[in-house]
Figure 1 (cartoon, rainbow, N blue to C red):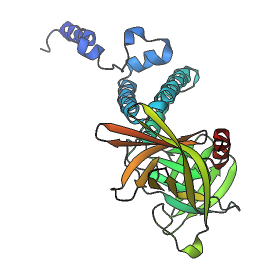
Figure 2 (cartoon, rainbow, N blue to C red):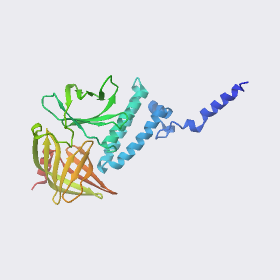
Figure 3 (spheres, rainbow, N blue to C red):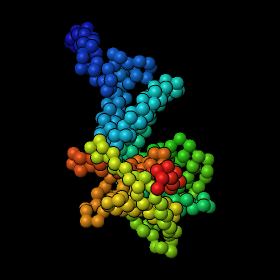
Figure 4 (cartoon, one colour):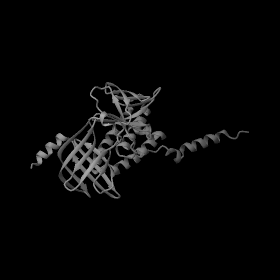
Length: 320
């Protein structure tokens, strides 16, 4: 009445042996060459394999966006990340560890390489005593949602974590937990209570009575990379500070002057007299700021020593 039950066994066995199912959980690498527990786990888990394919896609796009000088550093960092991912075999929850490693790194790459639209950061007033600027840019389009937190000169990326109420973002020894405009913050052991400022987002000016403004001027080394050729000059810099944070910079090359309006997520809006404003991507490493500007298939990299003390040393080395 119900047919031959052995037929069902044969069908199931055939399906399990099917190349389609066997290859369903294929990551970006060759599973025949998988080494170690974690790489084997990824090959056997469709969810983790999907994250690995996504990683290959996002990292590939990032390599096209990062400045040429930064690519080697990012490749080395990625190799270090892979090693850390593979160390998840030591965790009590191996799969959860691997899943978290992928999701965290994907968010970092997308934000740092400018693959996402940058939200307007929200400014907060904190009870830290020294009134260091505190800004948070919320990226709700990432998975999981994330936030770029800037406190003084330090910046990091935190991910949304489960919470009973409000929005809680964590990153290692940092926690930002906001509820109804007030946030409890744990910044590497320093406890803060921060409240959202009205109109304090970057790009919005607070009344001058509520803003501490200052300017600084210095001479520095600068240059531009075009078509693989590097040109170096001496430039003059004027930084405009609001509450100890640089929000505008005037950079004077010998033949052109740029006004730089610093935005969140490593974006800067550049203006020059008689030209249409454009947006570049910037990164700062060891006191030097690089700004990548793309115009169709052409790319220029403007750079300058942005740390005042380092600039004084570099200019001194050049001499009069």
